[in-house]
Length: 124
Image (cartoon, rainbow, N blue to C red):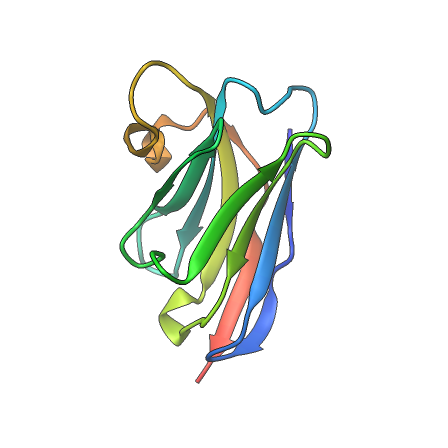
């Protein structure tokens, strides 16, 4: 299971840190990703991490940082300089990693385990 938390309401330019705690499995060998879905839009990959390798969508580069804490079995997404267009429900998800680069797995359609979403709202 995955438990996401850390969403909230923040003004443009502000920061939030999302947490995704895994239970029932360890992070080793898995790709853990953050995805988001805004009303009327498809769910999209924001950032993914696996064994220290990371991938960021263009919208997240330079503003978001994904990291993992194996001891806590938790993946974090530090989001800085938030923009109104970042407003969405954010989900974390996991899938067992194969032999492709991390970016290959950062697709919502490939994920096998999903956590409940956490709402991020950025006001202008």
